Every structure is written in C-alpha cells, then in structure tokens.
Length: 160
Image (cartoon, rainbow, N blue to C red; front, side):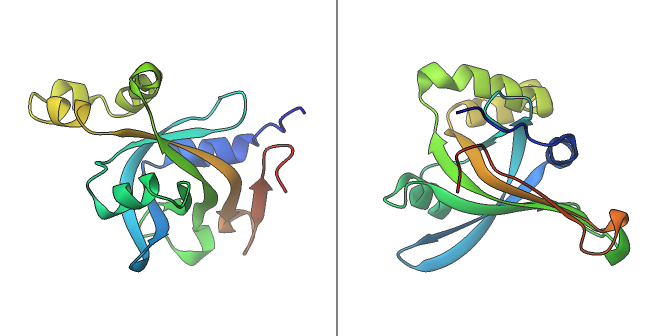
C-alpha cells in the first residue's frame, strides 16, 4: 500500500521545533518528559523523530517495557500568543535503535544539534546513551495564525 505523503506544513512544523514532550504510562500511572529531538522529515514512510534518553530513566524504562513503546507527544514553542499559536500533537511508537541502525539516526540527531559533537563532555555521554526512534502514526498541526482552531492531520496510508 502506498504511503500518503506528510504535508509540507506538518514537516515544516516538525523541523521548526527542537523539544517535544512525550506522554506515556507505566505501572505508576501517566507521566510526561521533555526531550530534544531531531527529525528526518523526508523519510519515505513519513517523518521519523530521534531522541536520546537512558533506558534507566522512568520514561526510558516505560518505553522499553511491555507497552510496546506507544506514546503521545506535543511540540511547540513557549511564549506564544493564542492568535498565533502553532504546535503539533502526535502519537506513535518508540523503540531503541541497535548498533546497526544507530549511525543513520545519530547523523540526523547531530546534524540538528552539532554542539553534541563539539563538546568533549557531552559527546561521549550521549554516545553511550540510547538513541530512540519515534515513528508517528498520527500527527496534527494546530496553526491559529491561519484561523482560530485551524488543524491539519496526517496518518500514513493504511493507518486507521
């Protein structure tokens, strides 16, 4: 089945932000965590987001646990006025990348955040930390600059 292309407006919004808030649930209930992310907005099957977090954190344990890595997330800039508010809502699956897959995702991440490679302190720490892939199966762009409550949605073809 052919994938529907992700609209340019949603791809621009994804690349225009750098922080997403991941929402997940574990045995202690719902929780959220903010992480820096980089996006491969032109991936053939739809956007792919990459972020770094340890599997020892609460959200890392929850994502690697029995919930199959299902998350909801948002990305937006702070300090916006309501009439110009723009941001994203999404859902998808996260998974840690193994050694064979890590190189491509790491390139996307360090292209977005070159300071990671430039820092003698940060680079080795993040190189030892787990790199995650998030594949959205639903995205909604909210853009009040186009009219209050303006929404655009995307789902890959074949996604209910």
